[in-house]
Image (cartoon, rainbow, N blue to C red):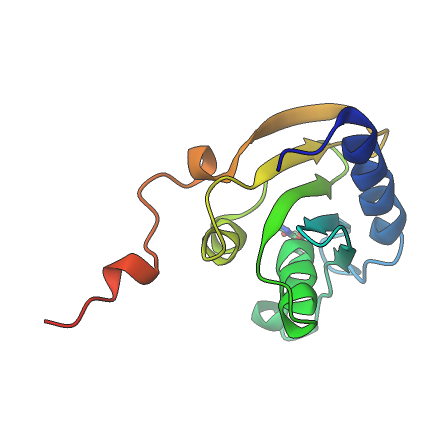
Amino acid sequence: MAPDRASVQELIERAREVRRRAYAPYSEYPVGAALLARSGQIFEGANVENAAYPTTMCAERIAAFAAVTQGERAFDAIAVVTLNGGAPCGACRQVLSEFGGDLLVIVADAKGQIHLETKLKDLIPHAFGPQDLVQP
Ligand code: THU
């Protein structure tokens, strides 16, 4: 179910807050994410970088993996907060799409201003998914 405006604002606030705990000494580009599960629970993530650069993990995937490991598999919305409203990377779009393209994605900047609000399926059209793994 699509969240109401108050829930969207709360998600953005949660993403702004958790962004402060990002570990991003290399890029200096902290990202915060707040993922709203169908249960009503909100799962947070912030990017965690590493001196071995490719082992870095994005905020969105940390939130998604935290939620799934708590037993959640249905999601209604995710708010992502970056300095300038940069949108989720391709890897995060793919991971989120596993759980449905109707997810509402809200991207806001550090001041909380919304830059993008759209369905995940519009961010990753024709995504590879479970339906593609048919046996020959
Ligand atoms: N980053 C995210 O956390 N989410 C995204 O969707 C895009 C990029 C992080 C990874 C890295 O720590 C920093 O932003 C710069 O790429």
